[in-house]
Each structure stands twice: as structure tokens, then as C-alpha cells.
Length: 83
Image 1: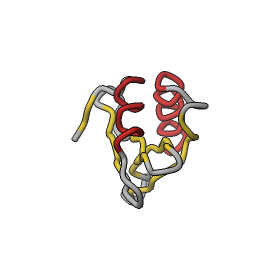
Image 2 (image 1 turned 135 degrees about the horizontal axis):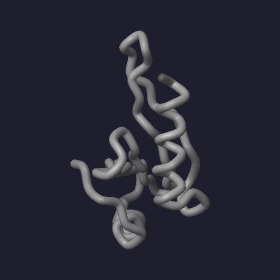
Image 3 (image 1 turned 45 degrees about the vertical axis):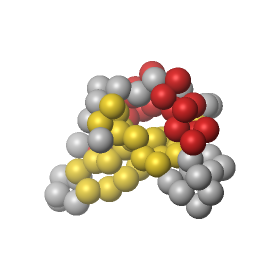
Image 4 (image 1 turned 60 degrees about the vertical axis):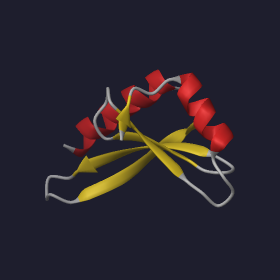
């Protein structure tokens, strides 16, 4: 489900993730941007389609070191590089 990511939303997901469970939130503002939240970490990635048509997931960094605005910019830059 795509949602507009907020700091409060990410922190809430981090607090409720169960042991050995993973939650993935997809950003509504930046297509392809997602954050995968696990028991020990939350990591940003972007899902891109290559010129050959393959879909690949490219890691961008970890939360909270990479904030939401920076993750959106990194996703945009990564998608441009892949094109």
C-alpha cells in the first residue's frame, strides 16, 4: 500500500514490527521509493525498471541516517542514472 511517508509513521512501524517480521512501506510521493522495516533496522531502496525491462531494487541507505527528503532525492537521482 502506498502512503505518504512521515517520520511519525516510520517510527510507529518500527515500534510495532514483531520479531522475525518485515514491513515494507511504499512512498506515495516518489514512485518506486520504499522503506523496509525489520526488527533491527530500516533501510531505503528504490525499485527501478532498467532499459531492458528488468525490475531491480537498489539500496539507498538506512533510516534515520538517510531522512525522507534525502531518500526521495536519492531515488530520483538513481532512477535518472539507470535511464
